[in-house]
Amino acid sequence: MTTPTLDDVQDYWNRHPAGAAEVEHLRADRIAYFDERDRQTSLLYPHLNADYEFSRTKDRRTLELGCGMGYNAQCLAQAGANLVAMDLAENAVRLTKERFALRGLKADYLVADAENLPFRSEAFDEVFSSGVIHHSPDTKAAAQQIERILKPGGNISVMLYHKNSIWYWWDIVFKLGLMMAVLNYSPAFVRNVLLKRMPHWKDLVMPAGQRLTLTDVVRSGTDFGGLQNPISRVYTHQSSRELFSGLRDFRFISNFNATGALEDPKSLKSRLIGPIVNRLNRRFGFFLIIKAKK
Ligand SMILES: C[S@@+](CC[C@H](N)C(=O)[O-])C[C@H]1O[C@@H](n2cnc3c(N)ncnc32)[C@H](O)[C@@H]1O
Image 1 (cartoon, rainbow, N blue to C red):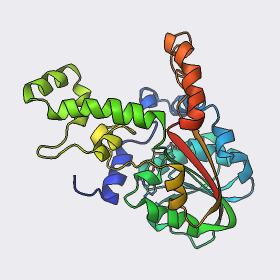
Image 2: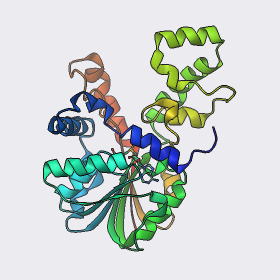
Image 3: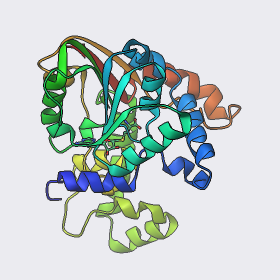
Image 4: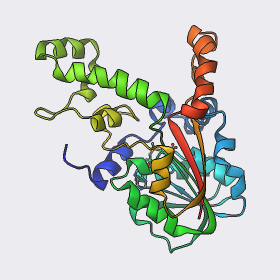
């Protein structure tokens, strides 16, 4: 693939607002649509408020960078933050605005690029960002912009995908990698049989003449649409310290979707594997929340 551009990233996220697919069936009833999204989020991420420390933003000038459908922005506004909610995708900002109007919450809204933030230096006390800058063409440039707009003594809570996680090594590299290798390197008739049985795997087929790489497996294994997702990167504690090299006092928390949270709580998976995986996710979860100070 040619190197993805910011336009590719913007176009992809305009078509796939994170979390929208799961509530698409409620699209006609806007209150039910956002309520159900909130219900699912609170089941999937039971520690979200504590992990991100939303409460520390009361009366503080706060940026949510990459607000998506606006769930975290809503938590920040409810905690009393003086909030700017921004995203590269117009659709994300539109959904956040709509959510805030329905809930009677206030923020400033902005469509902008993390790599070129339209704010003066040292404008914010707090910057929140959850699953955003690892999708941007130049993640380091976005990290430097975050450092620039933060006041001395200001804080970040930034979630990046975690390389040292169960989901990365087992579900993406091993399981999905193997499956994509079989799909892409099998003779055409085998691939056709597979695609007939699993038509949604079409998004995992590389364009003719292009070799499958680990980068392709990683972007297919995160978010929606398989290979349609232009960019996803993964970070360790060490590489995220290097990314935010101008910050100090690093703390790390990891988490991930609570296993079985949206399934039948009596299912075998929920009862047997759920508690173990959920506990492991507190150290080896796919969501690495980086907290640091300027
Ligand atoms: C996986 S979604 C996460 C959305 C939200 N933070 C959440 O937790 O649901 C990634 C978001 O990052 C945004 N994004 C990607 N690159 C960006 C950039 N360079 N500047 C601003 N937002 C960006 C996308 O538009 C998308 O809304």
